Image 1 (cartoon, rainbow, N blue to C red):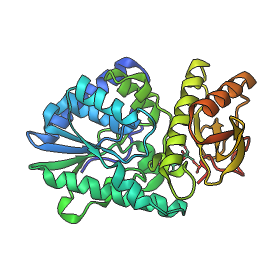
Image 2 (cartoon, rainbow, N blue to C red):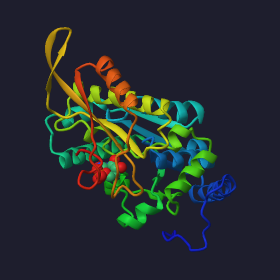
Image 3 (cartoon, rainbow, N blue to C red):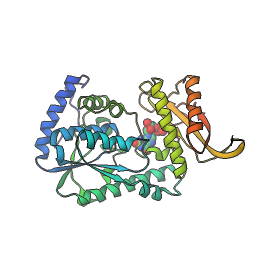
Image 4 (cartoon, rainbow, N blue to C red):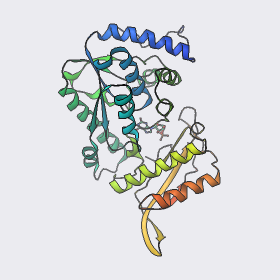
Length: 326
Ligand code: XMP
Protein backbone atom coordinates (compact mmCIF):
# COMPACT_ATOMS: atom_id res chain seq x y z
CA UNK A 1 0.00 0.00 0.00
CA UNK A 2 1.46 3.31 -1.03
CA UNK A 3 1.72 5.99 1.58
CA UNK A 4 -0.55 9.01 1.41
CA UNK A 5 1.21 10.74 4.28
CA UNK A 6 4.11 13.00 3.50
CA UNK A 7 7.04 11.94 5.69
CA UNK A 8 8.33 14.71 7.98
CA UNK A 9 11.81 13.98 6.65
CA UNK A 10 10.87 14.69 3.02
CA UNK A 11 12.82 17.73 1.78
CA UNK A 12 10.95 20.50 0.03
CA UNK A 13 11.69 20.24 -3.70
CA UNK A 14 12.80 23.81 -4.33
CA UNK A 15 15.78 23.46 -6.64
CA UNK A 16 16.35 21.98 -10.09
CA UNK A 17 18.67 19.34 -8.54
CA UNK A 18 16.03 18.16 -6.06
CA UNK A 19 13.44 18.09 -8.85
CA UNK A 20 15.82 16.00 -10.96
CA UNK A 21 16.40 13.58 -8.07
CA UNK A 22 12.62 13.24 -7.61
CA UNK A 23 12.21 12.55 -11.34
CA UNK A 24 14.91 9.86 -11.35
CA UNK A 25 13.41 8.20 -8.31
CA UNK A 26 9.86 8.30 -9.72
CA UNK A 27 10.90 7.06 -13.15
CA UNK A 28 12.40 3.96 -11.51
CA UNK A 29 9.37 3.51 -9.24
CA UNK A 30 6.90 3.93 -12.12
CA UNK A 31 8.73 1.40 -14.27
CA UNK A 32 8.69 -1.05 -11.39
CA UNK A 33 4.99 -0.46 -10.70
CA UNK A 34 3.76 -0.56 -14.30
CA UNK A 35 6.08 -3.13 -15.90
CA UNK A 36 5.02 -3.62 -19.52
CA UNK A 37 1.36 -2.70 -18.91
CA UNK A 38 -0.52 0.31 -20.24
CA UNK A 39 -1.56 3.40 -18.29
CA UNK A 40 -4.47 5.71 -19.11
CA UNK A 41 -4.46 9.42 -18.23
CA UNK A 42 -7.02 12.19 -18.66
CA UNK A 43 -4.81 15.06 -19.78
CA UNK A 44 -6.60 18.37 -19.31
CA UNK A 45 -3.56 20.56 -19.88
CA UNK A 46 -3.64 21.81 -16.28
CA UNK A 47 -0.38 21.85 -14.33
CA UNK A 48 -0.93 18.60 -12.44
CA UNK A 49 -2.07 16.35 -15.28
CA UNK A 50 0.59 17.84 -17.58
CA UNK A 51 3.38 17.08 -15.12
CA UNK A 52 2.08 13.54 -14.56
CA UNK A 53 1.99 13.04 -18.32
CA UNK A 54 5.54 14.32 -18.83
CA UNK A 55 6.81 12.13 -15.98
CA UNK A 56 5.09 9.03 -17.34
CA UNK A 57 6.30 9.70 -20.88
CA UNK A 58 9.83 9.83 -19.46
CA UNK A 59 9.26 6.56 -17.55
CA UNK A 60 7.20 4.40 -19.90
CA UNK A 61 6.89 6.26 -23.22
CA UNK A 62 4.26 4.74 -25.50
CA UNK A 63 2.76 2.60 -22.73
CA UNK A 64 1.05 5.79 -21.58
CA UNK A 65 -2.22 6.59 -23.34
CA UNK A 66 -3.25 10.22 -22.83
CA UNK A 67 -6.80 11.31 -23.53
CA UNK A 68 -7.44 15.00 -24.02
CA UNK A 69 -11.13 15.89 -24.08
CA UNK A 70 -11.86 19.23 -25.68
CA UNK A 71 -15.19 20.10 -24.08
CA UNK A 72 -15.42 23.47 -25.78
CA UNK A 73 -14.89 25.25 -22.46
CA UNK A 74 -11.12 25.60 -22.74
CA UNK A 75 -9.45 28.97 -23.12
CA UNK A 76 -8.33 30.06 -26.56
CA UNK A 77 -5.43 27.95 -27.84
CA UNK A 78 -5.27 25.57 -24.86
CA UNK A 79 -6.32 22.35 -26.56
CA UNK A 80 -4.01 23.17 -29.45
CA UNK A 81 -1.14 23.64 -26.98
CA UNK A 82 -1.80 20.24 -25.38
CA UNK A 83 -1.56 18.58 -28.80
CA UNK A 84 1.52 20.59 -29.79
CA UNK A 85 3.46 19.93 -26.58
CA UNK A 86 2.50 16.34 -25.87
CA UNK A 87 1.98 14.81 -29.30
CA UNK A 88 4.33 16.88 -31.45
CA UNK A 89 7.14 17.74 -29.04
CA UNK A 90 7.13 14.88 -26.53
CA UNK A 91 5.88 12.21 -28.94
CA UNK A 92 3.14 11.07 -26.57
CA UNK A 93 0.49 8.55 -27.45
CA UNK A 94 -2.31 11.16 -27.31
CA UNK A 95 -5.95 10.72 -28.18
CA UNK A 96 -7.61 14.06 -28.89
CA UNK A 97 -11.38 13.97 -28.51
CA UNK A 98 -13.36 16.80 -30.04
CA UNK A 99 -16.43 16.72 -27.79
CA UNK A 100 -17.38 20.37 -28.22
CA UNK A 101 -20.79 19.77 -29.78
CA UNK A 102 -21.65 17.04 -27.27
CA UNK A 103 -20.96 19.25 -24.28
CA UNK A 104 -22.66 22.32 -25.68
CA UNK A 105 -25.74 20.30 -26.62
CA UNK A 106 -25.95 18.80 -23.11
CA UNK A 107 -25.58 22.26 -21.61
CA UNK A 108 -28.30 23.88 -23.68
CA UNK A 109 -30.77 25.65 -21.39
CA UNK A 110 -28.90 24.63 -18.20
CA UNK A 111 -28.57 27.84 -16.18
CA UNK A 112 -28.06 26.75 -12.56
CA UNK A 113 -24.31 26.93 -11.73
CA UNK A 114 -24.18 23.68 -9.76
CA UNK A 115 -26.24 21.88 -12.38
CA UNK A 116 -23.82 23.12 -15.05
CA UNK A 117 -20.90 21.72 -13.06
CA UNK A 118 -22.72 18.38 -12.70
CA UNK A 119 -23.56 18.17 -16.40
CA UNK A 120 -19.96 18.97 -17.38
CA UNK A 121 -18.55 16.45 -14.87
CA UNK A 122 -20.95 13.68 -15.90
CA UNK A 123 -20.39 14.22 -19.62
CA UNK A 124 -16.65 14.23 -19.06
CA UNK A 125 -16.81 10.81 -17.43
CA UNK A 126 -19.01 9.50 -20.25
CA UNK A 127 -16.58 10.67 -22.95
CA UNK A 128 -13.57 9.38 -21.02
CA UNK A 129 -15.26 6.03 -20.41
CA UNK A 130 -15.97 5.64 -24.13
CA UNK A 131 -12.32 6.24 -24.93
CA UNK A 132 -11.18 3.90 -22.15
CA UNK A 133 -13.36 1.10 -23.58
CA UNK A 134 -11.74 1.47 -26.99
CA UNK A 135 -8.33 0.71 -25.48
CA UNK A 136 -6.99 -2.77 -24.89
CA UNK A 137 -4.70 -3.86 -22.12
CA UNK A 138 -5.05 -0.85 -19.83
CA UNK A 139 -4.27 -1.80 -16.24
CA UNK A 140 -3.56 1.53 -14.60
CA UNK A 141 -5.18 4.93 -14.36
CA UNK A 142 -2.83 7.86 -13.74
CA UNK A 143 -4.10 10.90 -11.89
CA UNK A 144 -2.66 14.30 -11.08
CA UNK A 145 -3.60 14.10 -7.42
CA UNK A 146 -1.35 16.36 -5.33
CA UNK A 147 -0.83 16.56 -1.57
CA UNK A 148 -3.36 19.34 -0.86
CA UNK A 149 -6.02 17.22 -2.63
CA UNK A 150 -5.37 14.40 -0.18
CA UNK A 151 -5.19 16.63 2.88
CA UNK A 152 -8.13 18.88 2.01
CA UNK A 153 -10.60 16.53 0.40
CA UNK A 154 -9.94 13.07 1.80
CA UNK A 155 -8.20 12.01 -1.39
CA UNK A 156 -10.96 12.95 -3.79
CA UNK A 157 -9.77 15.43 -6.36
CA UNK A 158 -12.79 17.53 -7.16
CA UNK A 159 -11.77 18.42 -10.67
CA UNK A 160 -10.29 15.05 -11.54
CA UNK A 161 -13.55 13.67 -12.70
CA UNK A 162 -12.35 10.22 -13.68
CA UNK A 163 -13.08 9.04 -10.13
CA UNK A 164 -16.61 8.29 -11.30
CA UNK A 165 -15.79 5.50 -13.75
CA UNK A 166 -17.94 2.35 -13.56
CA UNK A 167 -16.73 -0.66 -11.57
CA UNK A 168 -15.47 -2.69 -14.52
CA UNK A 169 -13.15 0.22 -15.35
CA UNK A 170 -11.66 0.56 -11.88
CA UNK A 171 -7.98 0.47 -12.73
CA UNK A 172 -5.12 0.54 -10.24
CA UNK A 173 -4.11 4.13 -9.57
CA UNK A 174 -0.80 5.73 -10.46
CA UNK A 175 -0.41 9.02 -8.59
CA UNK A 176 3.25 10.03 -8.64
CA UNK A 177 2.63 13.61 -7.42
CA UNK A 178 0.48 12.67 -4.46
CA UNK A 179 3.00 13.82 -1.84
CA UNK A 180 3.94 17.09 -3.56
CA UNK A 181 2.78 20.65 -2.96
CA UNK A 182 1.91 22.83 -5.93
CA UNK A 183 5.22 24.71 -6.02
CA UNK A 184 7.05 21.37 -6.07
CA UNK A 185 4.89 20.12 -8.93
CA UNK A 186 5.90 23.25 -10.87
CA UNK A 187 9.60 22.62 -10.13
CA UNK A 188 9.27 19.07 -11.42
CA UNK A 189 7.38 20.24 -14.51
CA UNK A 190 10.07 22.80 -15.32
CA UNK A 191 12.80 20.17 -14.84
CA UNK A 192 10.92 17.88 -17.23
CA UNK A 193 11.10 20.61 -19.87
CA UNK A 194 7.44 21.63 -20.00
CA UNK A 195 6.88 25.19 -21.28
CA UNK A 196 6.49 27.97 -18.70
CA UNK A 197 2.97 28.73 -19.96
CA UNK A 198 1.97 25.25 -18.79
CA UNK A 199 4.06 25.05 -15.62
CA UNK A 200 3.05 28.48 -14.31
CA UNK A 201 -0.50 28.35 -15.63
CA UNK A 202 -2.92 30.14 -13.34
CA UNK A 203 -5.67 28.11 -11.63
CA UNK A 204 -8.48 27.31 -14.03
CA UNK A 205 -11.71 25.73 -12.80
CA UNK A 206 -12.46 22.17 -13.92
CA UNK A 207 -15.71 23.31 -15.62
CA UNK A 208 -13.59 25.87 -17.46
CA UNK A 209 -15.22 28.76 -19.23
CA UNK A 210 -18.57 27.12 -18.46
CA UNK A 211 -18.85 28.94 -15.13
CA UNK A 212 -17.78 32.26 -16.65
CA UNK A 213 -20.40 32.24 -19.40
CA UNK A 214 -23.14 33.02 -16.90
CA UNK A 215 -26.52 31.33 -16.98
CA UNK A 216 -27.37 29.03 -19.88
CA UNK A 217 -24.32 28.83 -22.17
CA UNK A 218 -24.77 30.07 -25.73
CA UNK A 219 -22.18 29.86 -28.49
CA UNK A 220 -22.15 33.59 -29.18
CA UNK A 221 -21.47 34.49 -25.54
CA UNK A 222 -18.97 31.67 -25.18
CA UNK A 223 -17.12 33.06 -28.17
CA UNK A 224 -17.21 36.58 -26.69
CA UNK A 225 -15.85 35.13 -23.44
CA UNK A 226 -13.02 33.19 -25.09
CA UNK A 227 -11.95 36.08 -27.30
CA UNK A 228 -12.09 38.70 -24.53
CA UNK A 229 -10.18 36.37 -22.18
CA UNK A 230 -7.47 35.95 -24.83
CA UNK A 231 -7.16 39.73 -25.20
CA UNK A 232 -6.96 40.14 -21.42
CA UNK A 233 -4.20 37.54 -21.18
CA UNK A 234 -2.28 39.09 -24.05
CA UNK A 235 -2.44 42.57 -22.51
CA UNK A 236 -1.52 41.33 -19.02
CA UNK A 237 1.47 39.55 -20.57
CA UNK A 238 2.54 42.67 -22.41
CA UNK A 239 2.23 44.72 -19.19
CA UNK A 240 4.34 42.19 -17.26
CA UNK A 241 1.43 41.33 -14.95
CA UNK A 242 0.98 37.64 -15.72
CA UNK A 243 3.20 36.45 -12.88
CA UNK A 244 2.14 39.28 -10.53
CA UNK A 245 -1.62 38.75 -10.52
CA UNK A 246 -2.79 35.40 -9.14
CA UNK A 247 -5.82 34.84 -11.35
CA UNK A 248 -7.48 36.95 -14.04
CA UNK A 249 -10.18 36.26 -16.56
CA UNK A 250 -13.29 37.69 -18.15
CA UNK A 251 -16.94 36.90 -17.48
CA UNK A 252 -19.92 37.34 -19.80
CA UNK A 253 -23.29 37.72 -18.07
CA UNK A 254 -26.56 36.61 -19.61
CA UNK A 255 -28.06 40.07 -19.86
CA UNK A 256 -27.77 42.55 -22.67
CA UNK A 257 -27.17 46.26 -22.48
CA UNK A 258 -27.74 49.08 -24.91
CA UNK A 259 -24.95 50.49 -27.01
CA UNK A 260 -24.51 52.46 -30.17
CA UNK A 261 -22.37 51.31 -33.05
CA UNK A 262 -22.03 53.03 -36.42
CA UNK A 263 -24.85 55.39 -35.55
CA UNK A 264 -27.30 52.58 -34.80
CA UNK A 265 -28.50 51.24 -31.47
CA UNK A 266 -27.32 47.78 -30.52
CA UNK A 267 -28.38 45.49 -27.71
CA UNK A 268 -25.20 43.55 -26.93
CA UNK A 269 -23.32 41.77 -24.14
CA UNK A 270 -21.17 43.31 -21.40
CA UNK A 271 -17.77 41.79 -20.58
CA UNK A 272 -16.57 41.87 -16.97
CA UNK A 273 -12.86 41.80 -16.11
CA UNK A 274 -12.00 39.85 -12.93
CA UNK A 275 -8.48 39.99 -11.47
CA UNK A 276 -7.53 38.89 -7.96
CA UNK A 277 -4.58 38.34 -5.68
CA UNK A 278 -4.72 35.71 -2.97
CA UNK A 279 -2.62 33.18 -1.11
CA UNK A 280 -5.11 30.38 -0.63
CA UNK A 281 -8.21 31.46 -2.61
CA UNK A 282 -10.17 31.73 0.65
CA UNK A 283 -9.85 35.51 0.65
CA UNK A 284 -8.82 37.71 -2.25
CA UNK A 285 -8.04 41.34 -3.01
CA UNK A 286 -8.43 43.23 -6.26
CA UNK A 287 -5.24 44.78 -7.67
CA UNK A 288 -5.12 48.41 -8.72
CA UNK A 289 -4.55 48.05 -12.46
CA UNK A 290 -3.05 50.88 -14.50
CA UNK A 291 -5.82 52.96 -16.04
CA UNK A 292 -4.10 52.92 -19.45
CA UNK A 293 -4.10 49.12 -19.38
CA UNK A 294 -7.80 48.96 -18.54
CA UNK A 295 -8.52 51.41 -21.35
CA UNK A 296 -6.47 49.44 -23.83
CA UNK A 297 -8.20 46.19 -22.94
CA UNK A 298 -11.57 47.93 -23.19
CA UNK A 299 -10.76 49.42 -26.61
CA UNK A 300 -9.58 46.08 -27.93
CA UNK A 301 -12.52 44.09 -26.61
CA UNK A 302 -15.01 46.61 -28.00
CA UNK A 303 -13.41 46.72 -31.42
CA UNK A 304 -12.31 43.06 -31.80
CA UNK A 305 -14.98 40.96 -30.11
CA UNK A 306 -18.32 40.66 -31.89
CA UNK A 307 -21.49 41.25 -29.85
CA UNK A 308 -19.88 43.20 -26.97
CA UNK A 309 -20.77 46.83 -26.24
CA UNK A 310 -19.51 47.40 -22.69
CA UNK A 311 -16.52 46.46 -20.48
CA UNK A 312 -16.50 46.56 -16.67
CA UNK A 313 -13.86 45.94 -13.99
CA UNK A 314 -15.11 44.04 -10.94
CA UNK A 315 -13.73 45.75 -7.80
CA UNK A 316 -15.20 43.32 -5.27
CA UNK A 317 -12.89 41.54 -2.83
CA UNK A 318 -13.54 38.06 -1.42
CA UNK A 319 -15.41 38.08 0.86
CA UNK A 320 -18.10 39.17 0.10
CA UNK A 321 -17.77 38.25 -3.57
CA UNK A 322 -16.31 34.90 -4.60
CA UNK A 323 -13.55 34.84 -7.20
CA UNK A 324 -15.72 33.22 -9.87
CA UNK A 325 -19.10 34.69 -10.65
CA UNK A 326 -20.89 31.34 -10.49
P1 XMP B 1 -14.33 30.98 -5.61
O1 XMP B 1 -15.16 31.41 -6.78
O2 XMP B 1 -14.98 29.92 -4.78
O3 XMP B 1 -13.03 30.30 -6.25
O4 XMP B 1 -13.85 32.15 -4.79
C1 XMP B 1 -11.89 29.89 -5.54
C2 XMP B 1 -10.96 29.20 -6.50
O5 XMP B 1 -11.53 27.96 -6.94
C3 XMP B 1 -11.69 27.94 -8.35
N1 XMP B 1 -12.97 27.29 -8.65
C4 XMP B 1 -13.10 26.04 -9.13
N2 XMP B 1 -12.18 25.11 -9.43
N3 XMP B 1 -13.90 23.61 -10.05
C5 XMP B 1 -12.59 23.91 -9.91
O6 XMP B 1 -11.75 23.04 -10.20
C6 XMP B 1 -14.90 24.49 -9.77
O7 XMP B 1 -16.08 24.20 -9.92
C7 XMP B 1 -14.47 25.77 -9.28
N4 XMP B 1 -15.14 26.87 -8.90
C8 XMP B 1 -14.21 27.79 -8.49
C9 XMP B 1 -11.65 29.40 -8.78
O8 XMP B 1 -11.24 29.55 -10.13
C10 XMP B 1 -10.70 29.99 -7.78
O9 XMP B 1 -9.35 29.80 -8.17
